[in-house]
Length: 506
Image 1 (tube, rainbow, N blue to C red):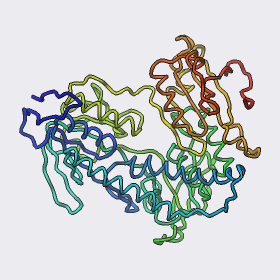
Image 2 (image 1 turned 135 degrees about the vertical axis):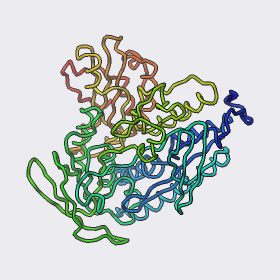
Image 3 (image 1 turned 90 degrees about the vertical axis):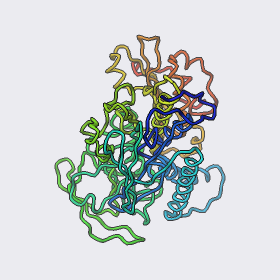
Image 4 (image 1 turned 180 degrees about the horizontal axis):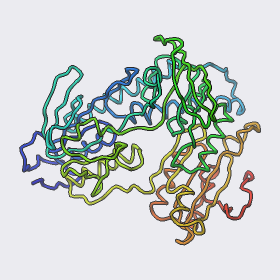
């Protein structure tokens, strides 16, 4: 059987009680899969990673590293930053800088972002080699519970056996059952490497991906519309979600709601350097309408790739939405097959997948007993008004503890760096709130923040919620002045009181 190794020591070859090619095979080269593979190899396991990206309908593909690096968190944050620089350039003039207003260069931005991503793709391959993890750029499917068959881009096949498998394939964006959707529309898999300027853009969906894309496109000076079927940011705090929508409208983003698309037709074909012209027919409030857009981006959710690995060959059970119900944390119903990341019914977040992968590898090969904590996971939505949250939304807290036991402390705030701006319709949207359980010494069960640097602020306070911080703990903390995070240490107005949350400068 496997010999347990001390985690921080160089691990010698393991004693094996099997004759398979590998101890562990990981299907998927994204953040979670790579973390799991490298951690397992660190503790002496012989590991292989299979990763292969099927091209999008627009023929977009990418390298090793998964969604986050290639078509998710990293390029999203970089384009979000690009749009913020435009806003800061205007602010800079109020601080005395004499700047010449320049137009934005889409091609240059995309080129620099893609160069960064390609460099990271190569670094990951080198890192796997240095850590003795075998990597195959091949698409693997199950033959039986210890065997996969893989195929590369040339059609060459390979058969590999392994003692254990970790499923970490993640998911891909959904397309709606709408005529012309897959022929003419794009998704977030395409936008970050789009070879032509997107022009007038329609973002379909109210997910954080849709709103983030709409936000940075509008910030880059692009005519942007968001089509919403019902509510914004389902699953997030409603109060904050609607404030984000209001802020984006004030910034110039147009919203069609409630609205659904019916058909997409091509009026003019795209070229290598120019966007197409697309007629989108849609229903808004029962009325049939249409409009012309250059780019239509669908962001209506993602589906795990569970059904693409021949799950029937091993009897793998999964839900209709592709998610895998797990037992004993990440073990599937197949006794040597595990699942992590976006395949689970858990928040679809890169750091969570990484932690899940590492802890799983430590339990399998280093004798650890530590499980992943899926509660109080901080996250940030990088919309123009950034939104950070950790813990429960207000509605979820009321549903769990009862309205009589939920106390909400909240306040508006003006970030110091924005006080030199002229009064505008954008004022009053920066917002923060703590959601507390009155029946448990006002333990903080939810923290929500709208404003600059939301990720940094929320990530720091997240530790407090994990450790069971109460409202009095936040009151005892001396805030850093003058920062936006300071507002969490000075809140004294509750929603229950009905008092105004407009605050004066210090």
